[in-house]
Image 1 (spheres, rainbow, N blue to C red):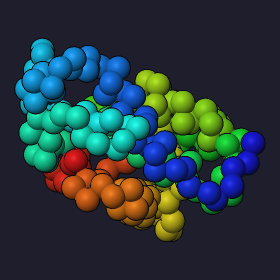
Image 2: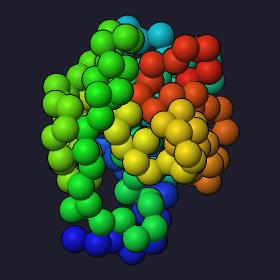
Image 3: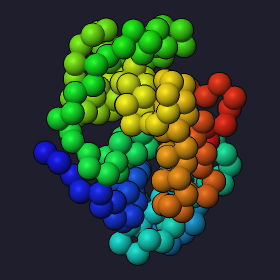
Amino acid sequence: MERTGRRPARRWTVAAVASAVAAAVALPATAAEAQSGPSGIAAKGAFLLDNGTNRELWSKDADTRRQMASTTKVMTAMTVLDSPGLDLNRQITVKQSYRDYVERTGASTADLRTGDKLTVRQMLYALLLPSGCDAANALADTFGTGSTEAARTASFITKMNHRAAELGMKNTKYDSFDGISQAGNNYT
């Protein structure tokens, strides 16, 4: 199935985030509870958005920069899905370097095997379901530009940052395709 170059609507992205937050947090019942926030939230930072009105309902230390770890892979998937003329049936061959990366960094893996050929669709599943850093590497290498794997993955990360800027994510920066930040510059 091919996809047009059209970008998903911003409200879709916000809705996905808002739905995930709403599913994890019970909404306050009264105005007083809304000011103090939902009970039982032990996280250092949190944000609750009303998707219908695009209004903040509650936040807790929401402007503090934090490492986002594997949630980085959501932007990796969005960046791939935003690729003009995307063919989800395009084959990607698993390189030994993807497996070496997982071994070297101790990263989570989808247990991809060198030489296997997976479609972009399958690679997206491998990225998001088992949180495969090997799949993230394969996608960044495939959808980035340049003459080396390092150049392609760096250009892909640049695309991720451009997409974040387009979405108005002004306090978000990516320095990796999978959330493993060598310099600590992968934050939101």
